[in-house]
Image: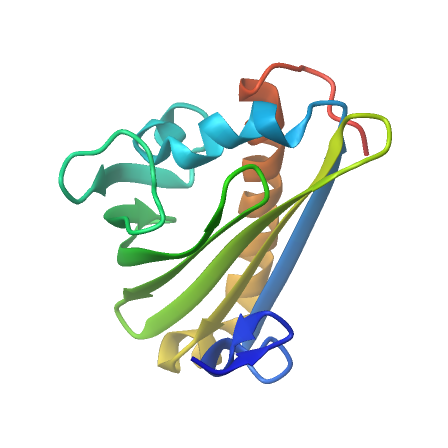
Length: 161
């Protein structure tokens, strides 16, 4: 797999029709956030953009080799974990009708014991090209709710901006 700035070449954000990035800073350590992030079947309890999350083989948490299906923002997606570094990085690639995507999470510890959470997504394919503006706006709004929900469900009600 060719990689461009940490991205698989086919998902280069510089050339993809859709690229989004959301970030939040929290007083929680990455190790406090990680359990909720990898408990994919539980996402719908705290993130409205995820539904019917099923890990192949019936697992309760994502692993480095997980495959899962889910509905995200109303679209059924087949997904495979592609990066897995506990409490640091999680990424997956997924395919749905007319689109392919790569979504990654990066948890970076801060000097004060908290961390910065970044989630980024690239989408390619005909649907991404035709609806780039609308899709980008939707992803930015929903992913902001996702990062805020991750912080909230992991133990705080006051994420730092």
